Image (cartoon, rainbow, N blue to C red):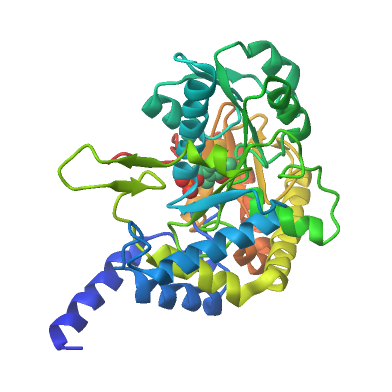
Length: 407
Ligand SMILES: *Cc1c(COP(=O)(O)O)cnc(C)c1O
C-alpha cells in the first residue's frame, strides 16, 4: 500500500473515533458483536466481494451460491420445505417492503382488490408503515393487549374484504414479546389472505432457544396460514450489515414479490427486490459467518444472549421505581419508570458511554441484548441503579430520542 493510501485509511479509522463502542458492549441497540473471530470472518469475506454485483447472479455464480445456501439454511431453521423459497435482501426493512408488496400484488391479481389494507398490531415495526406509504396500502393498526401481545379478536374485527395481509411479530421490537402467531395465521387461512411473520429480530434466536429446550410457541412455517417470514442476519446472525432473508411458503406466493420489465431501451430487466445494483459483500459475509458458526455456534451465542437478558430483566425488577414492560420472550426488553423521567436515566447512562433506545408510547427505555453483553452486564446493572438513584434525587428530565434520523 502506498503512503497516501495508508494516510487515507488512517483518517477513515480516526473519523470513527466518537462512534458507539459497540464492540465493547456499550450499545444496547443498532449493532451486534460475537467477538473478534466472527467479526474478522465477516469483514474479510465482505471485503472480497464488496464490489461485486448481485443484480446479475449469472455473472457472479459465487453470489448465486452464497444466496442459495444462506436462504436454504434459514429455510431449514424456520421449518420450510422444498416448496418454500425466498431471497436475500438488504435488511429487515426491505424484507418487509417486499412482503407487503407481494400481498398487495396477490390481492390485486387473485381477488381484484384495488384499495388494499393491512391489519397489524400497534407493536409491529415501523417498516410496515413505510411499506404501506410506499406502495399505497392502508395501515390498520390494532391496539395490543395489556401483555403487549397482538389482540387477535380485535384484528379479526378490523379485517374486511379489502384486507390483503395480517401481521404478527416474533418477537415484536418494542416490548420483546412474541405475538400469538397460531391465532393470527388462522384468520389469514380462513380468509385465504397473506400472513407475514416478522421474525427480523427473533428468527435466529427463537430457532436456537427451541433447540436448547426452551418452550417456544410455534411461530414459523409449521403454523398453517403463515405465508411469509422475514429473518435478519445482520442482527442475531452476527453477520455484516445488509443481510436479511425473506421466505415465502411457495413459489407462487414468491412470484408476487419479484419484478420484471422490458419497457425501456435496455432489454429485459429483472430483480428480486428493491435494489438494483446490490453489493455481494453482505451475501459473502453471511455465508462465511453462518458456515463458521454452524448451528452449534449459534446455540452458544443464543444461550449467552438469553442468560444475559434474564440477568438484566431480573435486575430491573429489583430496582425501585423501574417497571419491566414484559418479561422478555427472547432477548429484547423495555422498561419504564414510576415517579421520575426514564429518558433522564438514558441520558445519565450515556455519560458513562452506554447507549439504550428511548421509545414510546409509553415512555420507555429499550435494550437489545446480544452475545457481547455477557461480559459487561454486571457493570451496566450497577450503572443503571446509580443512574436511577441520581435522576430520582435530582428530579431531572431527559431529552427525547429517536430510533432513526433523516439528516
Ligand atoms: C430491525 C427490525 C426490523 C427492520 O429491520 P432493518 O434491518 O432495521 O431494516 C423489522 N422488524 C423488527 C421486529 C426488527 O427488529
